[in-house]
Length: 426
Image (cartoon, rainbow, N blue to C red; front, top):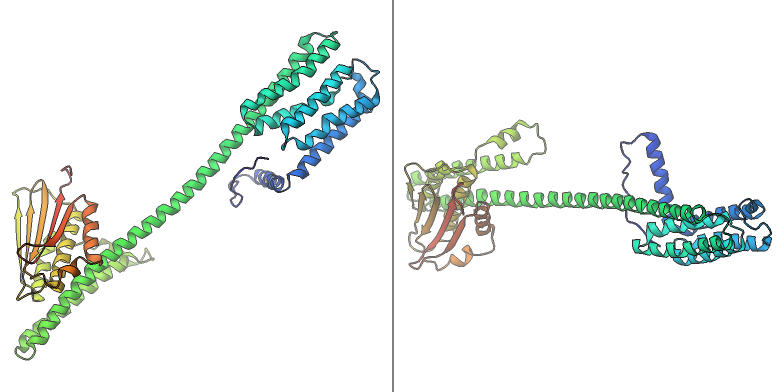
């Protein structure tokens, strides 16, 4: 028996008129009940048509019979043989049709010409509905011989009146089964497509959530990591200068306060975007707050210098460079910020320093950040499994750029970023 897949937990009749919803629910309930207990429906169908066949065998068969003197016991037996096999119409349709065709041959050959022979059309419909199309050859081969036997035994009527109309009826029933099957398969395909679309929608939502979490984690790492490194450098310098130069210590404390307030402002902006209340004024203002650009590199370098790391910034721009998008400028800013933060945390040696060289023309933007650390203690930490290096690579990959990091032959560390401009092929 064939089973079909569907969506029993979904109500596809939503929005339909009340009568249509009631009919669809009833049909769905009957279909589900039939899938759970198919023998009940088969038994009801068999009992109904068996009763109809026996009613006809009680005497009505003589109105169409060619030989009214056929024994009643033969008529009853043939009627049962034409109706009882309906119980196996879905499990063994070809076998049941073979039994009914043999009974029909007996009926036509004896001259009874029982109307119960037309019950074979039910088997033809089920075969067209459930079995492969090539199987329809068998109903034709089984239904034709009884008609030929009747035409040969009782040739009073022409073949056009006996064989041709019946075979046309069988063909129409087969076409009806094929049409119902095509419609059912089409509906099943639509339901399956709807399910796939729901799964894809949920997957896209999960992927978007993961991507957003990654972006937020990257932004918070860049903001917190850089500012805490600057604050740590300022605090160490202030503690060292407290005993000898109270004025320098006071300057360090002031710089710590400014850096902390800047970090809090950036975090408030980032968290304001995540606010669930879209009507919140602070959240909307935070969403409109500008992101860092190339113009903010000077302030970034000044903050690192205040933390105790000498930094030199050189910008080499073409006379008329193409403008960079806000996303590319943010990528450059964050990469420089992360590189200088790593220098603050990991550079070793006597009085390390850093240099930022930005080359900007009509083809590409090239950024090179180097430091003069001796590489004895920081290189392994810089290539560890933290968020810094992976965040820089993710930002670079968004704009099809290249990022190179590693130690210099002369000592120290280098981070090099190259981004193509919008109208330049990668």
